[in-house]
Length: 451
Image 1 (cartoon, helix red, strand yellow):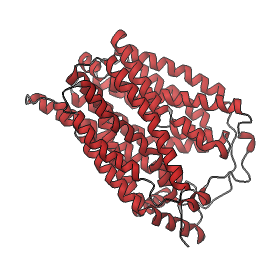
Image 2: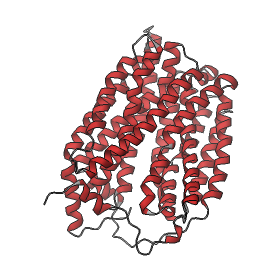
Image 3: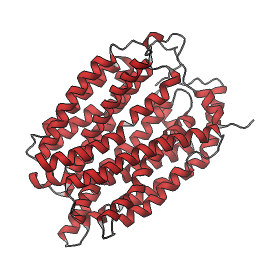
């Protein structure tokens, strides 16, 4: 009997166990709206504090006399390694204890470290504060998702997570626009200090609005070691190609976001405020449109029983590789910004489909592990290596009097974008077969493990 994506959705749709505490669900629309609104606000500031060094990079470089290689280290390895490696432990802490306490603690940590960055007088101190920001932000998404799962009923849970996730493009837009404007008028240090102080206020609001978090008593499931689950998922062709595509996407997006603002300032003479208002607002808008459109396309493809779930996102990534390459060499600033737009859109458009497809392939009870593996793929290698590579190429070009060195280094972004699109197209051809394997495993009496 043929296996469809609709069958997989029906089989793996999350339902609370019979022992789950339904008192944990938000009882009315007003309280639900306030609950989601405050988590959305936390998501915005999480992204603002993460993105600020990108728009402030030029000012920081001049004030602290840094090289592009050091900027790449600060925005790459100093953040990515800590953020990715601590995400899983903090997620387990949120699951086993109070996600509210984990989330508020994380907000306080990253806000404090952001503010301390405003006092840094050297590269070492500034990089240390970025480690602290990464430590706090590593637990933000897992603990917020755990709160949503305990407070929002399953019929509204998907939309709640979608609204929370919208904080990423909105935070990017706010970070670029407000951070650039404040940096131009008051300096980069005040941008970091202001963001840190605002984050402290958000932490207090989250604590009072979310309220005490009731515990859940899910039905016991057979436990399988996390390493064994990971090895089995990676052994599935579709999932393996999804991870490879995520790694390539990490290289493309990390280089793109770390150095596009400095590129526009140096090559086309824009100020930080001008880049924030143009590039930042476009990035936020394209992120919102891409996320909503990508989620809507994926839902429609599943309902239509389509065997191809990642076709349009993969094509857009490949096309964006061409436009981004052109953006790095055109002589006019406005045209360069316009040619960056497909890249902005493609990154956001892929995310709902990539995570949705990974959840379908992984099967019941494996969705969190599937998300973690994709996040590690996209969040560790690319952000750790790509900004450093761009900075080293830029410094080499400057030392050898080669023009547009930053643009040459940024070529890693369109190349990685094309590779991500190609990997997702291969994964798309294998998804249906691997979903059938997951369904067959479940039907044969292999319960989905709790991880």
